Image (cartoon, rainbow, N blue to C red):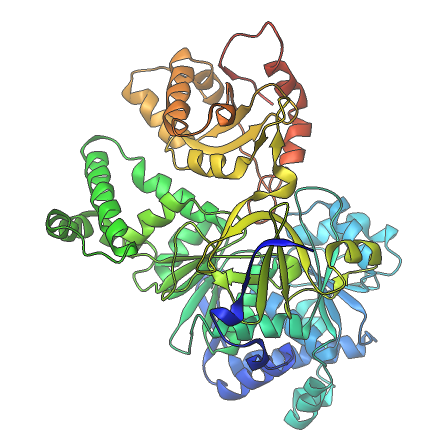
Length: 622
């Protein structure tokens, strides 16, 4: 397989041979030994924040292991976890790992039919459910899943279906196992895991096709933790807020690393309370997807009046300061004089809004706009963008405080090789590459070459210093009727920087021209409309107004002025409903499922290309 460029982590980081083999069970065992009295987990119990120590976590995980044994779950059999982030999620996971049971995380946002597919495909014999609402989903499909023998619910429902165990009842079943009270027995069980054994099966939530079960071994994840630890150091003085779904490998691998480092892991009460929880927990390290940074950026920059003018002035000063710092220059005198005032009036408040103690964010899961990243950098908030996939456990590349290049996803982590194929696809080789797809040998052979290169499906380029830049998703490339290839992600990323645009989706594959679907930032738009004296009774009436159409035409034209003519959308559709995880149009990491959106809005999109249609911008409800 020829390549146009190649980079190996050994050129920029530790030699692959330096990464030891290991297991997640040993990581858990070692950290609970070293940090017994320290707080491991913090969660909100409905009335107050409460802590679980590392020592308590060890005993609870041992009880989970014992209960699985009591219920005759054999090593290698599968157990599912259907839950939001909470201590029971992690404790169930660690208990499964020690017992040698392969756990199968399921996103809490999935529908009963989607859950049934994963349970049937994996052959799960037991499922942990977080709430009565999640339990109700399982009860709807349980009769069609003969292999599903046991159901455990963390929060007890008012009326419990027959055959369902509460969390306390389940744990009590494990109390008879000797490993709960005897450290030697527990340690012996820990040692039974081998690095090449499958630890978990994660079902991809990709933008196309049925989900596939990604088999990750202990060493896939352990080696990724070791590689990351060489670049991003964390310790017992650190804390984090965990809110990305643990069902996704990004948050899960990070939480493994943090747990192994003795860090306090606090669980957000919900995705809606993240902003408040950041101020309460005051974490030092947080991982997120770009959606969080986009929303914060929009919130800060959308202000009007004198406050808005102040923010825009501070942003302008910050950009000049950031440009100089990132290029290794000293900012000029005027910037050095203005920056302290911008910091005191704007940037300090932004840092306090994320808790005031943050060392850095890590961003992954989707591309982050360089301009948004630079804005946070200018405010003294470091966002380290990285890259990876479920199939790579997940990290292949990451920026670091010492090696930072905004607009890239960083250099390869230790033990990782990156190659760019002739068609631009990014190929990855390293110990973090999955064992394969569960029960899909043909799909595995298609994804991984005989000499170990994994096809990511992403398009990218390597610079002379080994920094990787993602340019688009291979399957997302739009080919116009004139044969021009257009990468939508960079364009959509640019449009997201606009304060009036919340969710842009570019369409036009095999069409004469591109069109743009836009979910506006309604808070900003409604404020603008009120300032203009426009009357409206709701979103739909607002989006029907000609003044709003002209606004979006002007805003899109302004953002697109540096793009080639073929890349500029000629038609704009304003939508009054957001794309969401729940309606199936977003993945759990907030990436748009382009094909789903195009299917659901097929008639709307088709209407844009009617020969007689002359309007540039329309509101078309869906």
